[in-house]
Length: 76
Picture 1 (tube, rainbow, N blue to C red):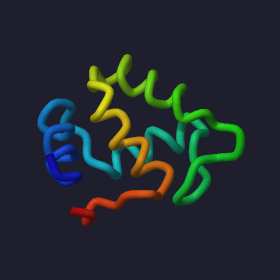
Picture 2: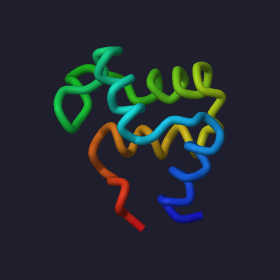
Picture 3: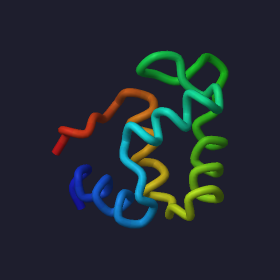
C-alpha cells in the first residue's frame, strides 16, 4: 500500500485529515512545529492513536511519520 493509500484509509475510518492529526498532536504537546517535541516517545503516540482513533499499528505508524516530518501527504 502506498503512503497516500494509508492516509486515504485513515480518513475513511476516522474522518480525520493529516491536518486534523497534526492539530491533535499539537494540543497533546507532542509536536513543536513540523516535528516531535524533545523527549516525546513515538511508541506512546502510536499507542494513543490506536486507542483513541481505533487505528491499526501500520496506520498509527503512518500518522507518526507525518508528525515527525519524515513523510508528507504528497509522498508516494
